[in-house]
Length: 156
Image 1 (tube, helix red, strand yellow):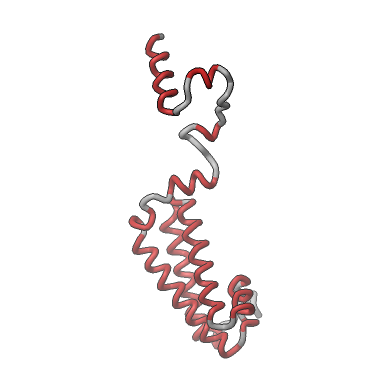
Image 2: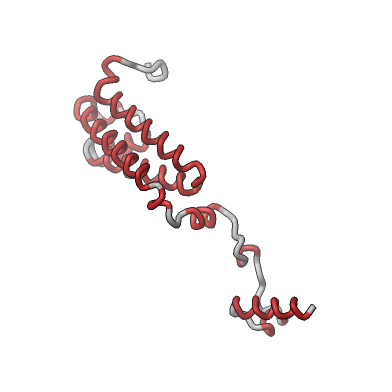
């Protein structure tokens, strides 16, 4: 039993709360005070350290894919206008900012969303980043060549 008392004193000292404050009820401990905090912010903070270093190649591929997508979107918007864009964020940004700045802002928004999701679900980050990159490369192909020869039945 003396060991338990010693551990309790060490925990109080580490937390910076005196025994009198705890005994007097001045300090109320909550579930979020402990080291095992849960929730989306805690999960994000736990998964963030080292993410960019570990997945730098996939992040580089994602950046190239999104830049290709944005540049091909600018190309077809110069020809067809912002109304032809299917992605709602890019269409809104292009309507407000124009056909050059809009796709670039849309690409930044897509990059931020993809990276945040990949950090949150770090276990699946390679799959998420690869899927987003492949979809962006496909969109690049579709914006330049595919629209003339291939119209998906959903858009038709």
